[in-house]
Length: 224
Ligand code: ADP
Ligand code: MG
Image 1 (cartoon, helix red, strand yellow):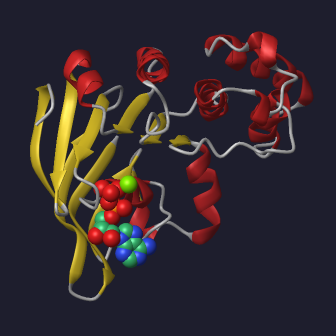
Image 2: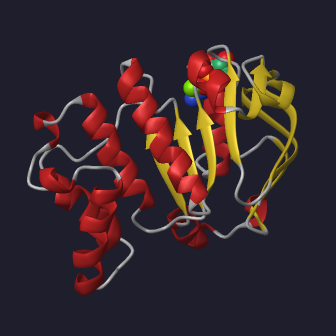
């Protein structure tokens, strides 16, 4: 499903943010990516999204080799991936319903589909009542739940979350992780970058540990 083969990424010559990374993630897996700040976690996520090009190595996602993908194919490719960031990235001037509907309009979903899917996605994250609210009227935890609803509304095969609980308190962090786990239980492959040791230790998922651009540990269970 996601395969990185000897992937190196240098932002400037001779300084590798990723250094010969090999990673295989099967369809339906839930994987935590942990490691110190600067170890290359976000670089890994951005390479999978094809926001960055590797300096060396091959990346294959859903059977497609990203290195040789045509530029005009990239938007379609990205539509198959839901993304959640630390800072929520909602549209401030649109209400919650519109934030999620927007994700459907860009993929040209018909209005009758949008009318069904947006409330369904909001229900999944427990925010059905808040559809008229604007982002600033919601707590951080609620805003991140909206971001998750937006990420899953198109039923992506892959969900990538880069420090999704970085701005949240422990209770909200748990709620967000549980929503990511539920998406995984519905069949989505999930990669979550996090610093939250307690959650990683308790959830007993596969944990990939990065250090200075290399994977130094990869096993099921707790932190490090
Ligand atoms: P993490 O997400 O684990 O904190 P990153 O992938 O963001 O790590 O960064 C890995 C390394 O690459 C760091 O040394 C960082 O300074 C460097 N880096 C990240 N983004 C850029 C960029 N756009 N330009 C130059 N260097 C970068
Ligand atoms: Mg990062």
